[in-house]
Amino acid sequence: MRKIVVFASGNGSNFTAIVEAVKSGKLQAEIVGLICDQPKAYVLQRANDENIPAAIFVRSEFSDKNAMETAMLNQLTEWHADWLVLAGYMRILGEVLLRAYPRHIINIHPSLLPKYRGKDAIGQAIAADAKIVGITIHYVDEGMDTGESIAQFMFEVKEGEDRDSVEHRIHALEHQKYPAVLQTLMEESK
Image 1: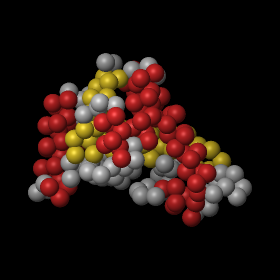
Image 2 (image 1 turned 45 degrees about the horizontal axis):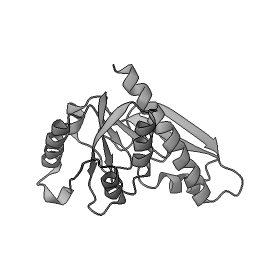
Image 3 (image 1 turned 60 degrees about the horizontal axis):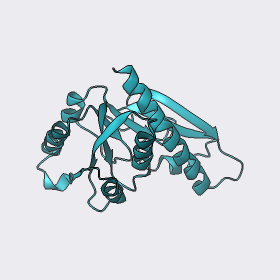
Image 4 (image 1 turned 180 degrees about the horizontal axis):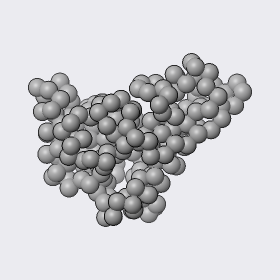
């Protein structure tokens, strides 16, 4: 069974969706750990509630990015991680992890890339009065949301729909589609 480590920085709703998919058998993998860069992130409580080990790596505690990623890689090796799954992780990965996990680091982004990269993609789409919005699941490279697209899913914004409604629909789409795409990737990589 493939061993995955989830990287997250915040609330962790995608983390929970992945956990639930594993529990239900829709995602045939084992979540062996969580990596987080925010000591007060709610995702840490979620991991604790599921008895999933978590490791916190705060950038300011390391001399540079490579030193932090080397420490992360040591933890990933200890957990025997096969895949790294980013789920709201708000840092750009560097060469240490990218070299160690080629085409085995996946991210989900709440826009139809290449549109609305970076922070607050939903806000960017609303500000641009986008009529079609959605999510992109992609391989991670050294850029910000620039990796090769694996899958995109979209929907039409309803007339007068507010940000909360759009955000709710995006999250529902993420929670449904991310585990399914991860399952397909793991099946294809056997």
